[in-house]
Length: 230
Image (cartoon, rainbow, N blue to C red):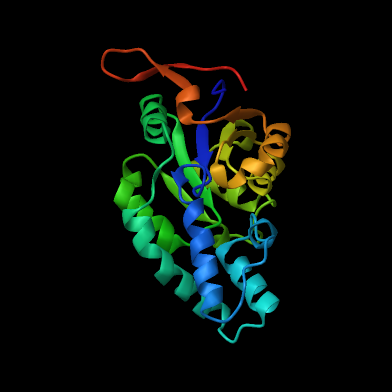
């Protein structure tokens, strides 16, 4: 999987960290406060959108009085404590980060989330020990499935797209990585379990957790062998 790979780029939510669960609760609470119900297709409809694009879409869909910036501020305020104290790495993700660092593979994050929430979880889980570049979709012209956020991350990492490996948890993100000309590994996540077959068909590789990517065999705990199966 890592043959000729110079850089690994992660999506954040549902991929590097286990956080998708909290957004359903936030969406329900946010809409209930305004006398509205969460549509069954809402999460799929906003899949891949940047934080700003989601605010624009939501404002229009529900005819909300708040501005786009006010909506983003509200969501950040509702989520920041959870990102700081309740969100953890996906199984094996931290060990994989250590492996990549040991192998001198540069690491980036390309996320649709807000910078404020990325910074909150990065501080909590000490991303700064491993991650060289963080790019949010609000910093580029188009959100996923457009390739913009992944191409920007690769540019900042000074890596050619063909030498980048993307980890993603949803179809729109997988397509963004593929559209950027990168290899993509889909990651199992309970939130997108109904999309498992679609993810497997779109991605180059598929894992249920990061322990499938490598084996721990050295006495000092370093990962020493990459798995080659999809």
